[in-house]
Amino acid sequence: MPDATYAATTSAPTAAAADFLRAKVQRRKLSLVTCYDYTFARLLSKTAIDAILVGDSAAMVMHGHASTLSASVELIRLHTEAVARGAAGKFIIADMPFLSCRKGLAAALDSAQSFMTAGAQAVKIEGVEGQEDVIRGFVQSGIPVMGHVGLQPQSVCAYGGFRVQGRSGESAREISRQAILLEELGVFAIVLECIPASLAHEITAALRIPTIGIGAGAACDGQILVLQDLLGLNLDFRPRFARPFLDGARRVLEAVAHFDEAVKAGMFPASEESYS
Ligand code: KIV
Image 1 (cartoon, rainbow, N blue to C red):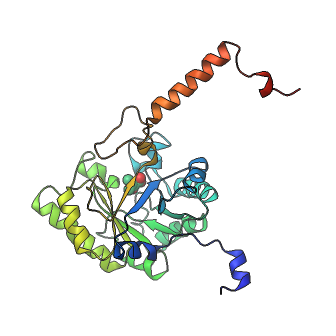
Image 2: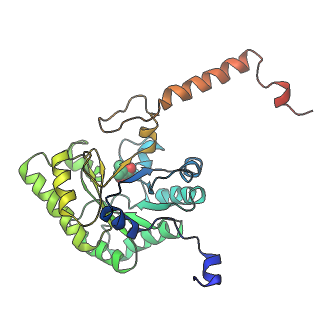
Image 3: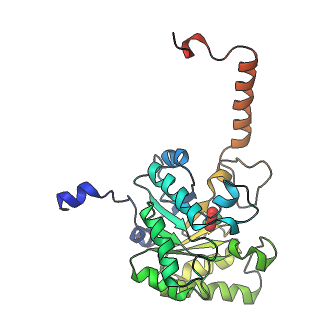
């Protein structure tokens, strides 16, 4: 039995990093989505999804930047707080933003601390090379770390665009090596972004920890999508992996058009929508 004082003052998430490993052992697929705000977080708290990522994609999706490089520690902290207020009970992972793991372990720990105290239960780190000590230091400090290899959007300037990775033998071997190294460093799961399905299959089979795919085929142990892509809210952005599960943009436009028409026709508000 948990101590009564402890139980009363903590709200344990329904899932934890260990559940990711259990899911792989039990061959249960994991579903994750990104979220950046309180309203959607409340809705997601009523679903069966396994975890929420407060991704640095917030810089693009919520703030209109051209890449994720503009996401700052403060921005991710603010979005994490909002999500945590709405999605109590969900396992929340916060993205370590561009360069936040490149200024030494102490600075990286400060950033992670601000995310964990804002309500995250884990962080995600893009890439491995040069960040081994940070990843090891986080894991030793009790911070669950999710890895991220394949297309690393924070390296968009080095790639010269958002490009599928791992198509050449050399690149595929390098991504496999990074995934194995991440497992050795103690991460609890790895995002595989935009790599050939066959490569994701090989990596998934080689690892004890689960792989979470985005543009990496069906063999991954789980899948993640940006919530706004899943809801079909983007009119002009549709990468091939981002299946819209709702015609969201059309539905929103229709609703707003109905409101506009009702207002202009004097049909809104009705008497029962007004106070006496
Ligand atoms: O920031 C993000 O949304 C991500 C996912 C695409 C995995 O890193």
